[in-house]
Image (cartoon, rainbow, N blue to C red; front, side, top):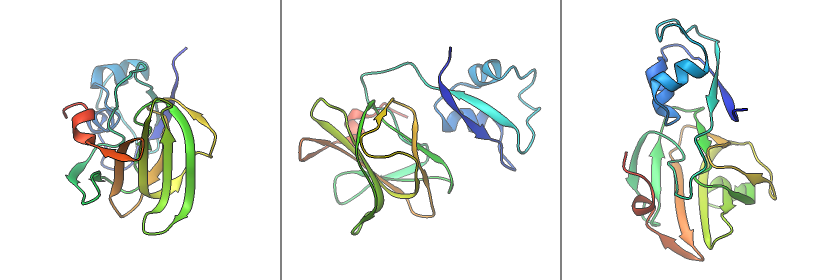
Length: 166
């Protein structure tokens, strides 16, 4: 049985754009949803988004334009309301809406010395203590960029060096 989540088609979205957002190829997304044609999407239609196979590497939490931040992480801009997905499996260590200067923030402990930080969220979809699998949504974006950091212990690690090339 496939695991995943659902995406509701919004005006102007294409199957290619949705597949790219979730790191899938169009053929896989069409096949999983039994779509005879990529052109037959309708606004409001729900598409099943399968989780990628489990990986030991970090994955991009969000597709969009990005730049390095002064704190050693990445600021990633995307369409407001986009899902932010956990970069690697782990346990939610922190999920708070009141982290001074960071806004709504989720911290995931990957239980191997690495932590990932997702801040500037519009909505948090997970609770502290939750075991979370790679690729599962942990929040949504708002009007600000998502701030994403990878830390090894307390030291910032290079997110770009750990993420796959786009």
